[in-house]
Length: 454
Ligand SMILES: [Zn+2]
Picture 1 (tube, rainbow, N blue to C red):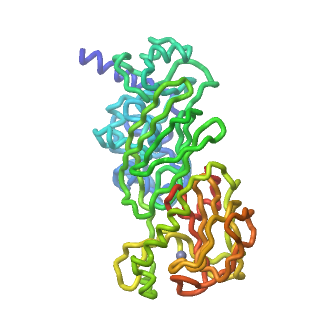
Picture 2 (picture 1 turned 90 degrees about the horizontal axis):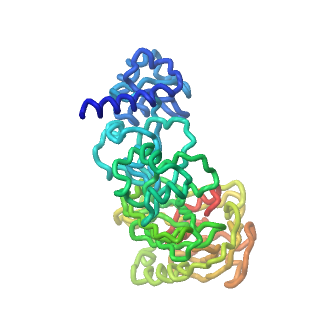
Picture 3 (picture 1 turned 180 degrees about the horizontal axis):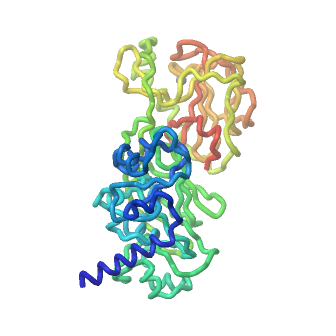
């Protein structure tokens, strides 16, 4: 029996070696896999990716000058013996685990574990990078099962043969399949929903924004990333949520939970770990400020007031496209979002909640996107402050102004003059502090100048 299984295994291995592209360096080391050099790769980076030494790569490939590594060069990767084919690198997405990856990439599960030097399925969390062998060109349909859905029923829905499906997916017991697993179906069918759920902004990063799109029109959609409740809104035929990762949230793995009814009226529940990676924020030089601006009995009520003003979720999206700079050219940034801060010799336990623009053109402050003015007042730490609601839980704050030129209730357009730069409140010189709040979390505004959210 064992011999039989080994034979099947060998047959299987050879079946995906043969169709792979011709590889120059492979002939000398046929038992090793091949990696195709990507833009930005260096020998050292590749060595780190595959956890082997740079010297071994250099030796195995007869490389004379490691600094001259051109894109698309095929390198033999020694050390992963017994695996052949073209290695690829991918981030794990929702619903994927070693079982589903084995099916989709048509690689035995033990090979996936060996390639990634792990034996633990928990290391395959959302956003983790895994090494795989490139999947053969095929016309299989990719689809995931919902709770209560059987592989048999889904095969019928996909117009595929049930037995072919179980063989293709190496399913030993088709009646004992976990929900949300992805399968290949041996049909050619392009008008099916492919991905039910999609993340934009993976891996999630401290202080950055992300979007999750769920392909359902159902209203009873709930989700959580760590302790953060996701706020969903209709977005064409989908439901979406824009959310921010707190800049001080320790990097690591957090539970991700999602629950909804899909368009076939089936309950879908997803519980998976998700990676939140470090944002690499440097420490600003220690700052000396008026001690009263650090007095919690004075600052707390102000923080709570801002939190209250930025808490309501306006269901209408008031802006469109990307945001624009709130100051004129030339733009000069004095302090970036997320920088760790120490005030009056206290430890570095605070962070910079926005972006500081110095005065390098003129003193004008502009609305970075359309929205409604929801707050204007003179505050102790923020000085003369304005808050604009852009809708969908997204707010812009403008602190330390000399003059506020808008009124509460007023609608403003992107590029409209809203104030004059000053140095009011906890400030050491004339500058504009621009803060962006998403779903109650302060995030780096600068990616919003390049990326269209949601
Ligand atoms: Zn600032």
